[in-house]
Structures are given as structure tokens and as C-alpha cells.
Length: 148
Length: 228
Image 1: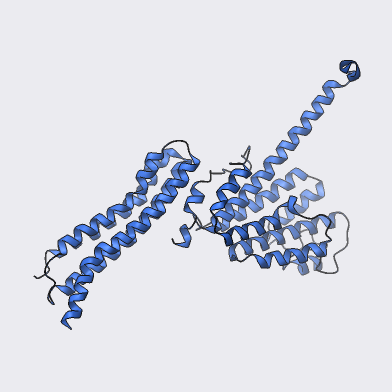
Image 2: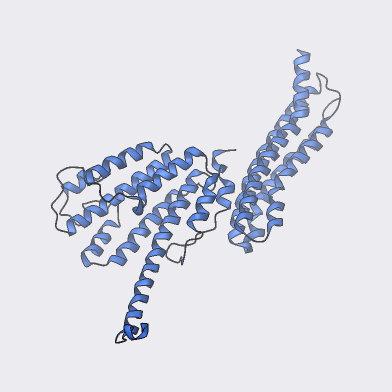
């Protein structure tokens, strides 16, 4: 039984990074494709399209930081907390990265036609980023209370 | 990639078309559009191709009888695998059948005896209410009465404007929730077709006007003397 609990602990420890990486992969791919499409249709502003398309990469950085903060000897006492925090923070980061990628794709698509709304069109992506930061910060706060 | 964002690159590479009646030309040429549509999956490309064969007037075989055309259309509709594209094809064919009914009645033809002349679920209703201005279909098609009035008064331009506007509004309605998926591609291509049709009318009118002016300018001039 202890081995199974420890395995869950390891899954939580690495899961937060893996899940956030999956989210960033999908988010950057969606926004990146929108950026490429916009570059085909326009003659300028390439840099800002690419800049927006990498916004969902922040989630994997948060995931790596949470993983290192959680890192400690995996014991039957610490493993359940590692699993809970790691898995749920990972899922929050995954979904936020995917949705942020979609918001970035829409922002690129809209600002291609109306460059004057570029800044405003990024507001939804920035709000999603805020929620990812919540998940990140409170995972760090709770990581400090794990025994072991 | 989620289905909702399957064609994010394709759609981002297509320029915004703007409103239908404000357009002076299509947002991009047919050649460019076809090049961009090469990014479609083969099955989706096939659906779009069938939709084009069904709805583009230049692709219609004018030698076919009504019954043959309807048989062919039913076969084509069945061959469209994507439900959204199929529903749009059915809507357009039903809409065209209603316009055809208005035109037939205007020509003085009696109510059709069979269903071989049109497509869809309204044929019976049209036959039963042949003498009513809008076949008692005003509830489902509020524009039908106005279309009838314009046919009766011979307002061809106004009628075309009304009919293109009806299709454009329908595309607006069904585009909700479709930003980067196949449905959005279908809607874009349909809108491109409408803009191409509307702007080509203007080009034809310009050509006619130009020819009339040239003829007026050359009236009374002996061209044989200039050639000599």
C-alpha cells in the first residue's frame, strides 16, 4: 500500500510539470498557427504576432517552479499532498495554457484586420494568465505546509 | 488539435471580407483562395467542392430538365458528409426553390402537380397555397412577401439585393460559435461567393455603360474613313 501511495506522490511531483508542458504545447501550437496565418495575409507586424503566440509558454515555467518547490523525500506522509497539489495545479495550468492559446489566436486574428485593437484584444489572454498565476502562487504557498 | 481550432492557420491567412454591399471587390482572388484552401483535410475539401458544384450557377448544367437536376442535387446532398455543410446546402436549395416558385407564378404558370420542380420540405405547402402572395410561409421566411413584391414590380436589382442579403444574414446567424473550425471555412467561402457575385454585377454594369458611352461618342463618325 505504501508503494502505491509513494507512486502517487511521484506522479503529483512530476505531473504538475508534465501537465503544464502539455498545455503550453497545445496553446503555443494554436496561437502559433494563427500567427503564421496572419503573416501570410499581412505585410508587417510579424514580430508582435509571434510575440503573442508564445504567451502560453509561461505555464510550463510555473509548472517547473512548482515541481522544484514540491521536491522532497517522497514518503507515505508527504505523498498524498504531493499528489493532490501537483495534479490539481497541473490541470489548472494545462487548461489555462490551452484556453490562453485560443484567446491569443483570436487576438491575432482580430488585430490583423484592426491593428488599433491589438492591446485591447490581449485582455482575455492576460486575464487567463492571471488565473494561472493564482494556481501557481497558491500551489507554492501550500507546498510550504507539506510534512517531510 | 481540437476540432474548434482545426483551421486556425487557414482562417487567419484569409483577409476580412467586410460587409456585402460595401465591397468593391473580393477580399482575395479566386486563385489565392483556392491556394489557401489546399490546407483543408481531403474529406473537408471534398465537402466544400460538392457544395460549390451544387450552389455555383456557372457550374450548373442548363441542358438538364428540372427532374434530372433535382435527382442530381439530392445525390450531391447525400454525398456531403459534414452535417453543417449538408444543412447549409439543403437550406440554400430550399431557398432557391421558393424563389423559383415565385418566378414561375409570375410567368403565369399553374401550381406544379408534382415535386420534381424543386427541393425540400416546402414544396407541398407551396403547391397548396399557390395563389397566396408568400405561399403562407411568411412566418418561416419573412422576406418572401417582399421578394414577391419586387418580382411583380420588375425590380430586378432590388430583388437581387434582397436575396443576397437574406443569404448573408443566414450565414451571420449560423456563424455563431464558429471561429476557426470547418464551419467557419464554409461560411467564409460562401460569403466570398456572394461578394464575387455582387461585385461582378457592378463590373458588368460598368462594361455596359462603357460600351453605351463609346457608341454614343462614335455616333455619326465614319469608321471606314478612319481605317483608310
